[in-house]
Length: 131
Image 1 (cartoon, rainbow, N blue to C red):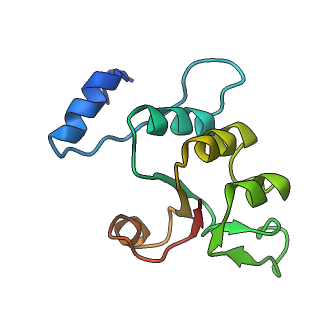
Image 2: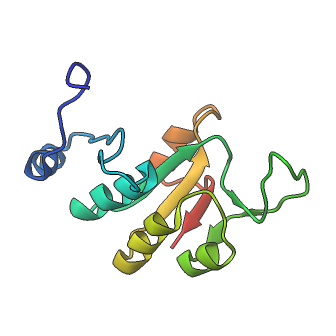
Image 3: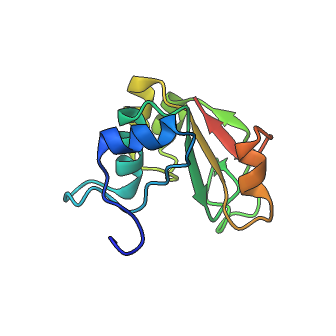
């Protein structure tokens, strides 16, 4: 990955943010049993990010898999606890728990819908807010 990005060093990432640069975390931690969702939650909390933006293939969190159930209902907002109790599979439970324990909001949105990234960055109502 060194040809594309620099390795994660907390103080470096924070320095980039202080200089108003965008920091994007890619990949996992390299540790077994630690998903990329958990890595995102760890890194976001480590640098005291404002929010985790989880760009994915669906436009938010649903009460059931929208790929299998056309009548699935999307949540515009959901609590960490509800997401955990309902076992909604958009993120793993370790990542949800880390975010819940640290008050880190998560916005889950469709990566492939045109202009969605821009909308979410500008604070538009996109996807599902977990808080």
